[in-house]
Amino acid sequence: MSQDGRLLIVDDEEVAVRNLARVMTREGYRVTTAMSGSEGLSLIERQTFDLVLTDLRMERVDGMALLKATRASQPDAEVIVITGYATTETAVAAMKQGAFHYIAKPFHFDEVRQVVVEAMTKVRLRQENRRLRDEIASYRGKARFITQDPATRRILELARQVAPTDCNVLVSGDSGTGKELLVGFLHEHSNRHKGPFIAVNCGAFNKDLFANELFGHEKEAFTGASSARKGLIEAASGGTLFLDEITEMPAEMQVKLLRVLQEREVLRLGATAPVKVDVRFVAATNRDLMRAIADGLLRQDLYFRLNVIALHIPPLAERRDDIPLLAQHFLNKCALQTGKPIKAIAPAVLERLKAMAFPGNVRQLENLIERGVALSSGETIELEHLPEPPSLPSPADTDQAKNRLCSLQEQERQHILFVLAEAGGNKTLAAQILGIDRASLWRKLKRFELDSG
Ligand SMILES: Nc1ncnc2c1ncn2[C@@H]1O[C@H](COP(=O)(O)OP(=O)(O)OP(=O)(O)O)[C@@H](O)[C@H]1O
Ligand SMILES: [Mg+2]
Image 1 (cartoon, protein in one colour):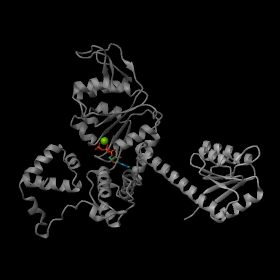
Image 2 (cartoon, helix red, strand yellow):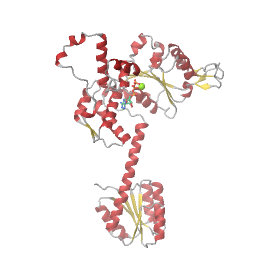
Image 3 (cartoon, protein in one colour):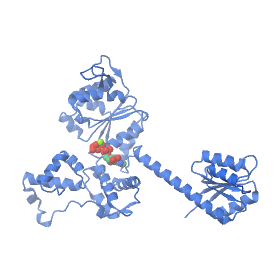
Image 4 (cartoon, helix red, strand yellow):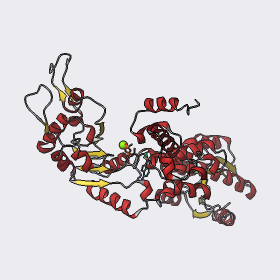
C-alpha cells in the first residue's frame, strides 16, 4: 500500500523532530517539520495535512493550540499529541479536544508507527467517504450530459454557449435521448440557475385546467376561486419554464402562449391588467417537428418563436460510440446508489450492447444496466445478466415474403413481441415506443396468451 499521507511533525526539540521525520519519511509519508508551535501554526494555516504529530508542551503556541487550529481549519485531518510528562489530565484534555491519540515520551518508534497508520487509515476512509458523497451529489444535482460523439458534442457545446442568453430553445429528439437532461443542463449553465426551474408536461392537462395552471387566476375569477393564484409562468419568473411535449398543448393554449412569448407578460384569468414576467422558455418534443406542424399539432408561428435555437439530439443508434461510455457511466452511478462493488461490463456484453437497435435510446440502456447491476452478484455484468435477445428467425421461416404473408393480427403480435424484446422486457418502455398505453399493452399480451404473469 502506498503511504503518501501528508504528515506534519511539530516539536521544539530538534533531535526529536529529526528522528521522527526520518522514521516517517522511511515509512513513505510526505513529511513536513516545524521547530516551534508558531511555525506549526502558520504551516497549518497555509497547507493541508492528513495528520499532525505534535508535542504538547511548547513555548508560546502549545500543542493544544495546534490541536484546536487543526480541528478548525482541516476537518479531515487527525492530530496525535506527544506528552513529555505523562500527566493524565493533559492527555484527557487533548482527547476531549478531539486528538486521535496521545503518546508519552519516551516512546518506541514502533508505537508511533502503529498509531500513525491507524490515524492515516481513519483519515483515508473519511476522505473516501466524502468523495463518494460528493460524487453521488453530483449525479443527483448537476446534469451531466455524457457523450463522446462529435455531432452530439457540438449540440452540447451550442447548449453551453446559448445557456447564458435568454433565447428561447427548442429541443428535439426521440424518446429517451436525453432532452430533459439537456434542458436541465441549459438551466444550470444559465445566469438563471439560482432562479426556479419549472417543468410542465403539456400533454397532462385539458385546456381549461391548463390555462389555470399556466396563467393563474384572480380571486373569484370563477366559482371556487376563493383566492388569487400565480400561474406557472409567473412562478418561473427569474428562471426557466420547460414546456415538455409542446406539440401536445391544446391549440387554443398555443395562441395564448404565443402572446406571452411576444409580450413577455401574462394575464391571469379574471385579471384586467397583465403582469410582466422574466422567463426563459425551453420547449421539447419527441415528434418530427415538420410533420407536427403539417398535422396541425404545433402552430407554425409558435414554432418560429420557440425555435430561436434548435437543439436536436441524435438517437443512440446513430452514435454507437456513446454506448460503452454511457453504459460505464450508468454502471458507476448504479454501483454508488446500491453500494454494490460492481465495476466492469464484460466485453461480450459491450459487444451485444453496441449491436442493439435501442428504440428506447439512452433510457433503455440505463434500464438495462440497472437490471444488470441488480442481477449481478460479482464485480462484472455478464451476458447472463442481460435480457434474452430477440430470437433470430429460424432457417425455416427466413423467407421474408412468407413471413409477411400473415394476418394483420399476426403482424401486430410479431411487432409487439419484437419491441418488447428490444425494450428488454420493460413494458412501460415498450408501450411508449408502440404509442399505446400500458393497459392496452397488457390486454394485447393477455390476448396473445404471451403474458405468463
Ligand atoms: N447523454 C446522457 N448522459 C447521461 N445520462 C443520460 C444522457 N442521455 C440521457 N440520459 C439519461 O437517460 C434517461 C432519459 O433521459 P431524458 O428523460 O432526458 O430523455 P427524454 O428525451 O426527455 O425522454 P422522453 O422523450 O421520453 O421524455 C434519464 O435518466 C437521463 O438522465
Ligand atoms: Mg422527457
